[in-house]
Amino acid sequence: KKIPIPGKYNIYIFGLNDAINTTEFLEENYNASLDVFVWNYRSHSWDKLCERRKYGKEDGINAGTITPDNISVDGDFRLKLISHDVAETGLRDRPIDGMRTVRRRQTGYAWFNYALITPVPVLGRVNINTASARLLSALPGMSQQLAQNVYLGVDGTGRMTLKPYQRLGDILKVRGMTVPVFERCANMLCVDSQSFTVDVEAETIKDVNRNGTFDQDVDKVAAEKRRRYVVQAPHLLQEGQQTARIVEKYTP
Image (cartoon, rainbow, N blue to C red; front, side, top):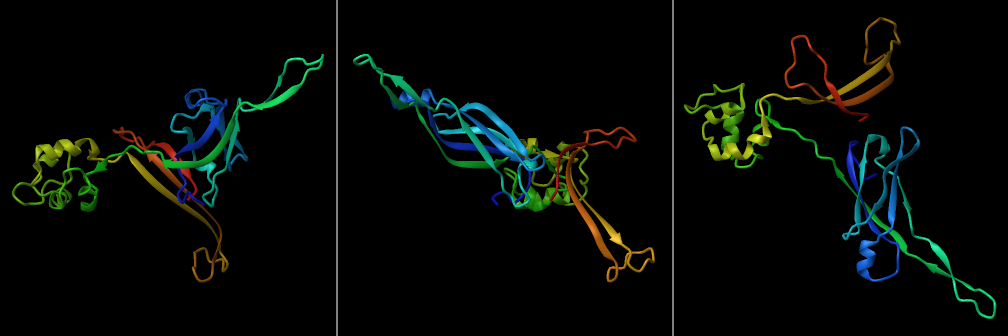
C-alpha cells in the first residue's frame, strides 16, 4: 500500500551481492549478478525487469520501470530477486593415505535491503493561455505580480489585451516581463496544449419504473466502469483530423 496513484515508476534495488570472499576492492568490482522480476496483476505472471544486473559501488541498481499492470488495487507491488554466481561449492583437498576429502566453501553472499520507487518524469510545458497565476508564479524568475500580469494578459499600458497569446514571444509584451526572465522560463512554456488527461465514467442503469428516463430516487446503477487516459495530440491537426495517441491508460 505504498503507491497511491497508478502510473509508471522507476524502481531501484539496494543490497549486496558479492560473488567472492576477498578484499573490498575485489568485492566491489566482481559482484555477482541479479535478475529482478515484478508481478503483473493483469496477466498473473512475472515480468522480467532486468537480467544479470550488478550492484555498483553504491550497492544499488536501477532495475527498470513498473507500469500500472504491476500495481494492485491496494497500491502493492511484488518483487522476485534471483542471484547468480552465489553458491556453495565443494573443493577437494589433497589425498591423504589414498583418500580424498571434500570441504564445503561459500563463494559469496547476497541480501536485499530495500526497494525505492520514483515516478517516471513526464515531459510537459506550462500553457500560458490556461495556467493559473499561482502556477505561473512557480516558474523561475517569475514574481507573483508578473505571474498575475501574464495570467491576465496585461500589456505595457495596463490593459488586458494580450490573451489569448498567439506565439510564445507575445509574453515579452506583458507588463513587467524582461528578457532575462523570459530566457529562464521560455523552454518551460507553450501557447497550446498537446497532452490531456481524459477521465471516462460509464454506468449501466436499471430502469426500475420503466419510464425511459433516469430517476435518481428510483432507478439503480447496475454496473459502472471508470477509465483514465493520457492522450497526446499532434502539434498541428489537419482540418477534420481527430486522432490522438494514447500515452497511458489505467483504472483510477
